[in-house]
Length: 232
Ligand code: ADP
Ligand code: ADP
Image (cartoon, rainbow, N blue to C red; front, side, top):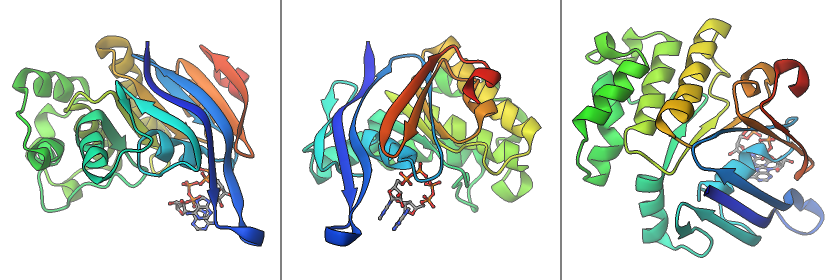
């Protein structure tokens, strides 16, 4: 089944002479429970596609669906609800709140949304990502890799339809990056969590079940069960 879907999505920034077509009729099905990577050179439209799929950016034509919801046409309340309950995010810069502990950061989206904490699920996520003994630490007391694993746990704790990760290893050394990628891979394989990752790193993309290649706002190639060599 499909966790998210873009159908003929076009996105243009600016107008007239300055118009830039960031996405040019992109259609893609994001399969539930799988780890999909979106690859392509800088400026190819990766971030725009992710933002459109996640309801962070509106489309000029075409349609986007997440879970059982049609995202296209949603207004303020619907979009807020989508962001709070149906999607989770991991950013290149971690984006943790510095005054909160790791545990408080992980639970923040649920607290903001007024949602109940599933303690058993919280424990499973924390143990899988290897943060049990770091829950009381603040971000400055954690390494970059640990901070990004906190961000991954935060993205998963609300059991969203899709976790979106934008260059999640961009600020990490290769060992910490491998831990984060391994966790995203396990969350799909073991928990059935749908994950979409934007990256320009072939090695990172090789952790995914499927790689979708963008160039100039179009999907130009796809790989299933990729090896790092095949992605390059
Ligand atoms: P990628 O993530 O692959 O680097 P982006 O989706 O960021 O690509 O950008 C695709 C194209 O759209 C690029 O030409 C970029 O300059 C342009 N673009 C992206 N965001 C904006 C924006 N907010 N305003 C104007 N142009 C934008
Ligand atoms: P990335 O490709 O890693 O997302 P970018 O530098 O392309 O990084 O984009 C960073 C931010 O700037 C994004 O929010 C994007 O929408 C915006 N952006 C990118 N290109 C342009 C542009 N030409 N004009 C205005 N905003 C842009």
